[in-house]
Length: 143
Image 1 (cartoon, rainbow, N blue to C red):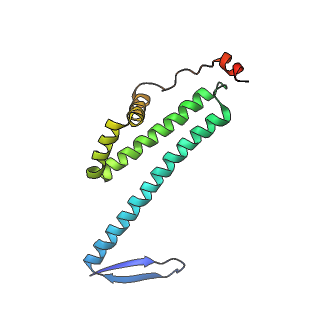
Image 2: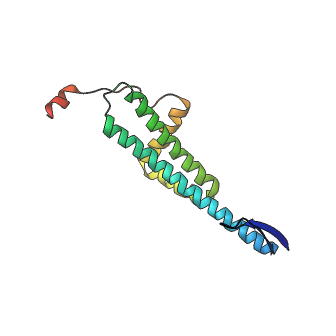
Image 3: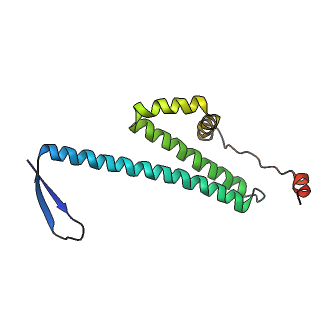
């Protein structure tokens, strides 16, 4: 038997409980599962928010302001690095399941390969976006 001490919500007093090794192991497994689930949700939300930030910035500011070159690269790098972090998390925690899924996505989806290699390029080589240009004639023609 083990003795654990827990402070319950809204109760300032520390409570003591006697539990078996088996119960302790079960609690440890459930807490681990809760941490994994919370991390999964966090990574998905960060990935989504980085993508939404980039789209909203592009829609609001366009590409015509000189600082947009920096913002555009920053938004893209944030999204690419979050994408990579999400992949690494799944490879570490769900290796058996995720390695097959990762291979399938890599083989079947150009967008996955493109994002994967863009992240590597921005990390080890240079910025993804090196220049922003405008076609003034086509913009004027659309008015």
